[in-house]
Image 1 (cartoon, rainbow, N blue to C red):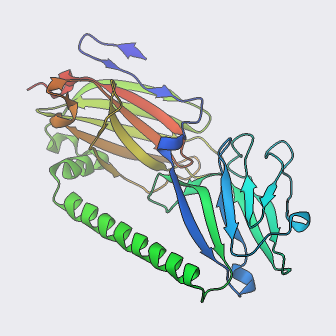
Image 2: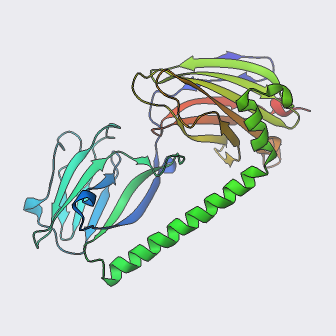
Image 3: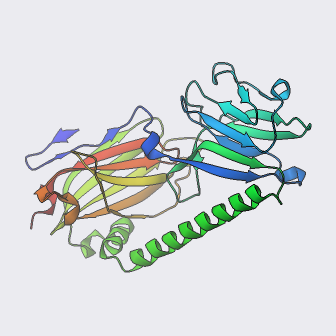
Length: 309
């Protein structure tokens, strides 16, 4: 951490988890039970001090419904008619998976695995956090078919949104500049080096180079994975105003999808000058880097002097 005469560029490693209600996708989803034995176990994603409810079509047998290894991790399991209620005392470890067996009054046993929040897909930083899961045994019931239709429409909307985002990125000047920076072709961009900061924790070592430009600012993160077994990747890069926390658009390009143990990778970020304007006034921004498990790895402060013409 070091100040300069123009701005203060800060690279800070977060010691605490920053996965909060705003940083996860809390939602209600449906599960259709499969008759195939290999598809019988479903994951339930929970967070400390957040209630998750499993709702079934039939009543649940409380005496035959249990979760293994819950002591010290979960509050005692609660069964209310056709609902099973889970409340973790604290966040589960990223590798935790607690077996849960729910037995319906007709004798049907439904296995689950209680896990911490997990990314929805490889390139999506926001993890799933279940608040309610509707479990359907009868695939032909009206409620089951309606839930399946709602899920299908939601997935279709998400795909259309993702395709539109990719289309815009293909023609985006900022994404093109970010790609050049990530590849090392800094000389082909309008940016000049302004500052350099670095830091490390148990997971990674990060060197950040801050650039200033005409109406734009940029940062190149060089990441070395210090882990011996697990890969490292970015789930989200977030740009927000220092005062108010208002999100701003940012262009991101990386050399690799994930950094293997002992390996290195480069991530380049470009912010347009418009991002520094809040209610007509120039403002400073936080550029936040979230790693694969949802923790905030580092953040850099960007000041308006970086976009001076």
